[in-house]
Image (cartoon, rainbow, N blue to C red):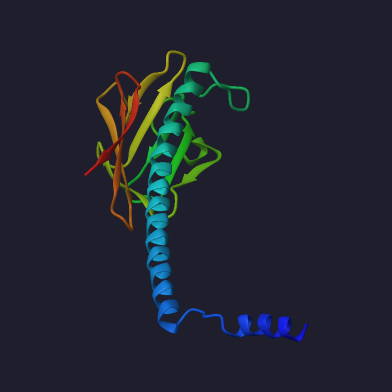
Length: 188
């Protein structure tokens, strides 16, 4: 029995472990892989925020069009000028969804703001440029959903460029005032 215990103890104490150099090398490799993964995760999160900002504008344009075509009523009445979006380069993190109550196809009265429908862009994402020049109002008027750009019927296209402030990546949202089609495309 003593001989057996002696063999077990000898085996336990004579085992060879990792050297300090081996531990340092493996920790260095682990740190390099971890830092690459964190950098890629951050870049992916930034790209997702940018995409989310472009999709916010796109979905609100489509919602305004849907409300106008459906004759959606607020407080029992359908707004004379329909529904729309107001964008201002001087306030590049805000997107305003409004009901045009006075029928002039513009957001010119704070009373036209649909309750709590002022949206903020995702963190570090801003509206970089607007065509036509800022501020821009894009409305859909019921019952046919006619499109108005800055008060003019079916005139050109609305182009909104959103940019991520850290990566400087940009996406372009284009809303065609003639067809009503909304597209998102990448910019170099």
